[in-house]
Length: 324
Image 1 (tube, rainbow, N blue to C red):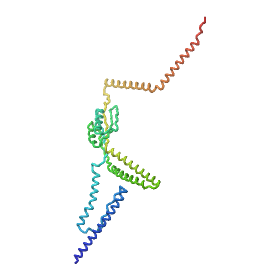
Image 2: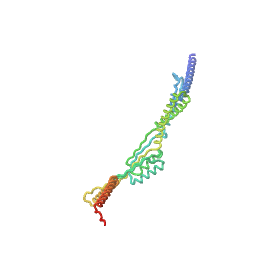
Image 3: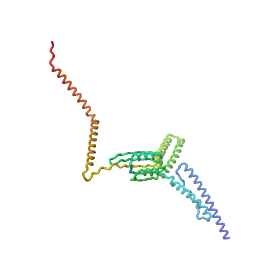
Image 4: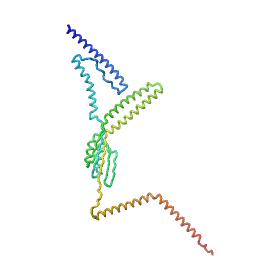
């Protein structure tokens, strides 16, 4: 009797525990439905998982085995989302590179780089060329599609001797996804605010709704502008290329007397002096014309006036002609 009584009591306890678990799960489901209805008003709200049914101890190994998959399911789902977000194909990376090259023939290298960038549907944002006594230097800043960044980068390095090679990357995946979520949430808020116009009854309500709508639209446009910038930076990588072509080395003075060295130095000095005199004359003639041209006109007018005065005086001093 004792063993049968104990078995009946155990079965009653198990039945009560199962009934309590079913009621708790039903209440959790109702709570989940209420949370889902409230999430329609607030898009970024994520309800926490419902608490597990209150059970002091697992009555049997079978029930423990049935409960284990139920608890492990959300963990596997969350892990799957984390893996999907961290997948390399979905990363948003801004790629940059700085390459300095020493080359022979700067014009040919420029043409090759421009053709290479244009062939891959890229574009040159800026290009500068400087001429110095010791050589020539050019800098090209190109924007190339990220899919062809590695190809163009390696092709540029093969044009000459690499003196500087620097690669950079900025991972903006988190900011990119956060902006997308914010834009979606704000667009949902904008739709709800627009629906509130139909419920407004007074002018004050209309003004308040209009102000709120303006704030939401401003935030959306700010986030969209930042998102467009990130898309442009991620889609087109920046490649900065500096080209240097060494010039003719300066003439070094020999140890002894060298007539050719001195003749060449004197000739170059004479050419520089003659060039300076020509430049000075051009500057004097062009810039000084505002002074000497009016002065020349005044002097010419004064000389003509003085000549007329002398002629009048001469005619006045002539004796009168005899009348017959």
